[in-house]
Length: 241
Image 1 (cartoon, rainbow, N blue to C red):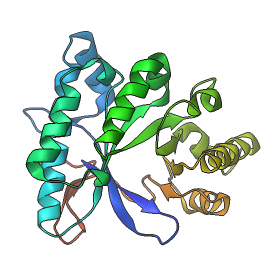
Image 2 (tube, one colour):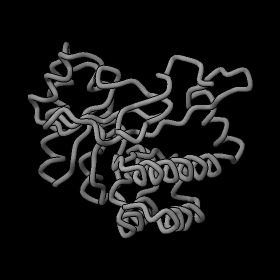
Image 3 (cartoon, rainbow, N blue to C red):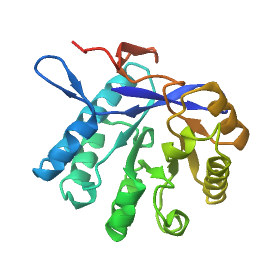
């Protein structure tokens, strides 16, 4: 599935978050929380990461060949740093498709990066050497976010949705989002707010100077993007045939 990421500077969506879903034989769709923990428990998570990366890069290359120069932001699991085959796979896919790596952003959660900081720094550095971008997801969820931020060579910060959802009624959440945005910008990083579900939240974020937003108010996940740059297929919540 693909969910638009909108720029608050011009209101345009040129990038999409790639979301993984499991489709059962009866067409029922299972969200990540229903199958990724099992994949980790049974040693299958590296296979899921490789499948998602392969599908996403090939699809993005197809869109670029058709003239749609959108960008994809691809989630990786917290175990991605341990997979010795993942970086060579990404390198080969970029080479085989001749895709501009600057249109590809990889994401991992802040807690996963902090839990394996040395491996995360090396992994992120290797991806950036390929020309890709890297985003730290769920930023603010950790207890020492600002301390570790100085050491992680990421390009973008995705502000944790729990702070964004509380913006309209919570002075503490407002202060937290503003401070995260200010520190990120001071370090030369782009900010993205998740879980934007209403216009009032969007207005707050625009006032604070956040760069990009993602959420149901901006656009729901869809099953496909067409060559003209518009979303296609079915929105999440329907059975995809």
